[in-house]
Image 1 (cartoon, rainbow, N blue to C red):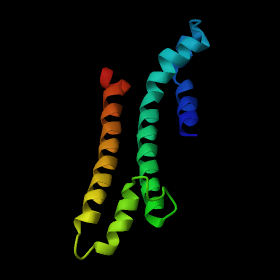
Image 2 (image 1 turned 90 degrees about the vertical axis):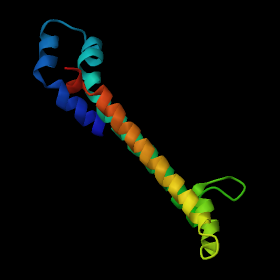
Image 3 (image 1 turned 30 degrees about the vertical axis):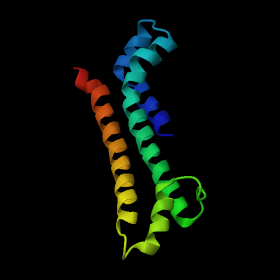
Length: 123
């Protein structure tokens, strides 16, 4: 939905109309004018959804609805470590910090990729 609205917004801009007026094909307009401006939104959405999927899997595993005990999962590790919280707090903190760092790294990677591929940065 976000990608479609971005494409619809960009297709009405002057440089797209100018490319259409000089006779560029639809494929050329799509690849050279629209896609470079839409790829930023795509990168941000993909990285946010990836982080969301990781957190969702961890939450479901914590609740017992995700992967089962032979399979490793940070949510499962946190769930199993909550019974030993007073005596071995690292059983929760290490998987929790690792999960936090992974999600933060994915979000920062998406932000950095967006900055690199931004058309306004290319000048």
